[in-house]
Image 1 (cartoon, rainbow, N blue to C red):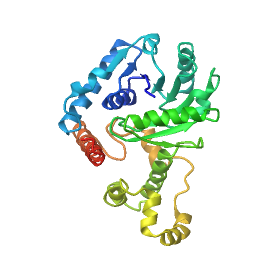
Image 2 (image 1 turned 60 degrees about the vertical axis):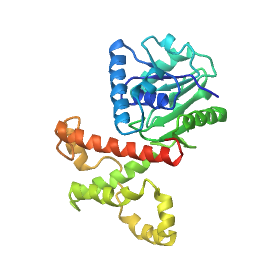
Image 3 (image 1 turned 45 degrees about the vertical axis):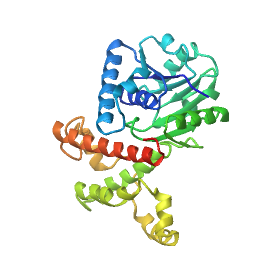
Length: 313
């Protein structure tokens, strides 16, 4: 079925999700709490669309930007919606307040999907009139360039909602995976933070410099992970070999139960990364923009290859 989608939230994720939907030739409504918010979102979408044109992903920004409409009135934004993507800050009380307003304005068959990266859908649905229609659709940043969307049903979410959500996600040219248990961090973040935990431990122990730890990923497993994930890589390497390595290596891997000492120290001094100009690395605006641009261009190249493989280009 064709969904009439409203995205609530105009920040980094919200406006990028709206762009992804429009790129799939589907109209979308973007709701923000003020005209100023919507103006910033519109500018962000225009800039991203122009870069997509430069990299050959779009012929013209005008092919998709008219598909996005903007509202700062919630009732108007939800007037015809059948599917809501909520992308507001990760504060449960704030989300619950929003859901109460939404449920007073829409029918019981409208799906409410949160873009949370870690909150459980069952917690999101607490106190709701129709918990069966709550689900998580975790888009990855940048949402218009990363294909993965993790779909996470709650304990009361009915299967029809899961199937309808998966059909819509695939209809906007995303890779949908269904997480069948409400585990913290879902799948992607659990894998990402397992790697980050070990990187923290190696750095804090002085095993190697930060540059060499990063290079160990970007110049090895990072090159093949776009094709073979961890389980498929094990098949190619030989499960007997991976078993033997697991048996002796797992005992020596980090078992940190919280952030490591080095990370805690950096955060305590306000060194939180590119946002503050310093984290593990020191950043100026030119350096940050250079890395961000290289990453964005690489993601666009991957997407272009995906579309060529499917015959969409």
